[in-house]
Amino acid sequence: MQATLADEQTTKIQPQGLADKKVSDLITHKTRLVEVPYTASLADTLNALMANRVWAAPVAAPPGHWIGAGASMIIESDKQTGAARKHYIGMVTMLDVLAHIGGDDGGDFDRRMQVPVSSIIGHCLESLSLWTLNSNTGLIDCMEVFSKGIHRALVPVDGQTDNVAGVELVELASSYHMVTQMDVVKYLKAHENEVRGILARPVGEVGAVSDVIFGVFDKTKVIDAIRCMNTASLNAVPIVQSNGGVMEDHGQLINGKDRKLVGTFSATDLRGCPLSLLRSCLQLGVVDFINKLSEIPLHDHSGFRNSTKELITCRAESRLGEVVDKVVNHHVHRAWVVDESGMLSGLISLTDIIRVIRVPMLA
Image (cartoon, rainbow, N blue to C red):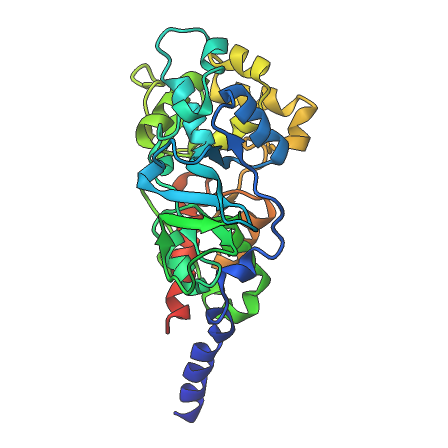
């Protein structure tokens, strides 16, 4: 009985070091914020995302002329005078870019890529809101926010509010950093000894696996995959093997469960795609597109990974720690769960990982 009590006390004590950490501990490595001006064309925005190897950036505009996404009022001010310098009016993501491309009204590709980035904010649900997290917010509170599907938030430097537990829509600061779900997962991996209990458990046992999986066939055209992802607000979909049946619809999302996984089509794939190639590849099948993209010299610099040759997968019995290692080391936002035959059975997202690790930290 004494040994059992000691074990329970040890389990409860393990996460306490992390429980005392704050958002400020997550951003010590951060440099300047990558942002784009509201007048930037979509093509220039795509180039900026590619050059900085990010897939989302806040959009900055002159203060006093815009209503921010989700009625937010996130202002950058002069450090000396406090005068407002710029207003972050929203977050543009690669999914917004996809939504604009996929919503083709018959106009030509080049014209669509020259629209100002301010005109596409809100094409996907995620960019309809813009959030901040105070640097003094505790790690557990930050994890609660990210466990509900928010992927990123701005963190004010020298902000005007302190000790705020959750996300805020109003902020005034001299500068900002960005904190993301991946920052949290990387931090947890770096301190894995403090959450080793939960990391040692199978993903299927801790409830980290979602069995609702929308996918596309390997013969689906790029433009159709983009439109499907836009409609369902999905950042990525699994590519599953077609059986060649005449009843297969390659223009719609399908239930990917119990189908052979052959790759991933992600919004981030297009981040590493030169506009000239993207223009010519919209009618290609998704697998052919990914293979073609991997052949260009620029893909290494952009961080592109050929998802048809480097599948990031696990089994339901895989330890959560193994999955954390894979998503961090490969810098992906999900791992596909497959059975012994490579048939798709589920997925684990960063949201799922953060949610299940947070539970024992609350004990």
